[in-house]
Image 1 (cartoon, rainbow, N blue to C red):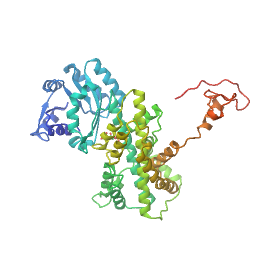
Image 2 (image 1 turned 180 degrees about the vertical axis):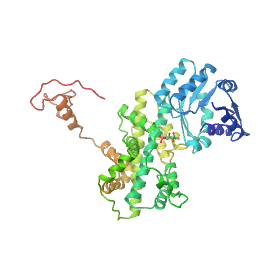
Image 3 (image 1 turned 120 degrees about the vertical axis):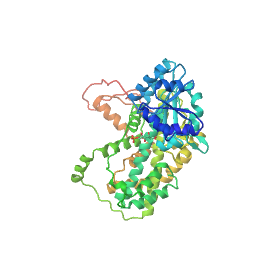
Image 4 (image 1 turned 90 degrees about the vertical axis):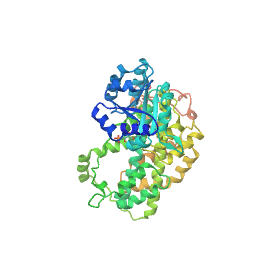
Amino acid sequence: MGQNLILNAADHGYTVVAFNRTVSKVDHFLENEAKGKSVVGAHSIAELAAKLKKPRRIILLVKAGKAVDDFIELLLPHLEKGDIIIDGGNSHFPDSNRRDAYLAEKGLLFVGSGVSGGEEGARYGPSLMPGGNELAWPHIKNIFQDIAAKSDGEPCCDWVGDAGAGHFVKMVHNGIEYGDMQLICEAYDILKRGAGFTNKEIGDVFTKWNKGVLDSFLIEITRDILYYNDDDGTPLVEKILDTAGQKGTGKWTAINALDLGMPVTLIGEAVFSRCLSAIKSERTRASKILTGPTPAFSGNKEELIDDLEQALYASKIISYAQGFMLIREAGREYGWKLNNPAIALMWRGGCIIRSVFLGDITRAYRQQPDLENLLFDDFFHSAIDKAQSGWRSIVSKSALWGIPTPAFSTALSFYDGYRSERLPANLLQAQRDYFGAHTFHVLPEFASATLPANQDIHINWTGRGGNVSASTYLA
Ligand code: 6PG
């Protein structure tokens, strides 16, 4: 990643100083990939600091966590007021909040920047999501926007907000990435185990989808993976152990959603699906004991493919709507002015979730920057409307076939919950009051002398017990 970002910057006319603690790697890089380019090597941090123009702009690409703090400590003795330290790793945003404040005390400017797009993105145009000390932005804006991916000529990079805002937005990007990947995996499972398609046939379905509303990097790479055969001529993907890894960014998103009380259910299910996949030996034992239906697909293949496309599209709309709900709430909670059209544009190109669909989201937020929810935009609201019969058919078919679809199903449940003016939480409040005297409020139209409006009410449901209510608390 680091080497590729350096080469990218050099290609855009910048002179870059490269440093690695394993000095031989610097020399090897200068003699090979960076040969003939405007890249200068440094063999120590002192040399790195001496060679940089002031204010120094240093980007770290090290493993998130302690390594970032350690590196910052190594840099500090060599820096001066006004110098800029940019953390380009997948750091957790509270760490970036802390580093921003710590460096500000020393007169240094911190930037925590999300960098997405993998090695290829870093080389030819990543999506960059910088946040932190805004005083740094004029000094890094040109280089960041020059090396970033472009979407219709606009850079997929803009200033996100204060402190850890850049890493927060990257975290949500990764959570959405988890959701998109899970939805694709469920579609593959339905076609393979549910309807008995071969990998080549599924690859053809993805080829078709990539020409429509689902056109995206993740659909494209899935198509290639499905077509990829091992040396023996059989699909390599079928030889891969079915336990998913994770480095934590999806989990952080789900935890943050719980902390902020936002129903970001699809990302949560995507994280839990990885957890379920990871208990392979237990699942293997369960598969010998627990029974379920055997899929019996006998319908029209084209119809199934179309329904599945609609299910994927509608679920994806829900996932992004939920992601932007989390961003909205974080803006309120942490006091960040997060710019939704800019975020959608940053994700439009260069990153792992890049897609045509993000162009529509950018358009929706540009038209109405204070849009309360993506689902209130006419385009998305009618897209969901058109997609819902196929979506419902897929969720019910998979339940009947015994194929797990946690992401498709939670998206649909969220949709049905979100559009319900009345939910059964009235009963839940009654239960809480019954067993714990936790109190409830009465609907205004039923307010009376015994059930006053806007007040915590406790009823003695059994005729036993007292009239004392527990103090109301909200998690
Ligand atoms: C990106 C990716 C990148 C990385 C994830 C993978 O935007 O370039 O999101 O950050 O691929 O860290 O995360 P998991 O290992 O948790 O799947």
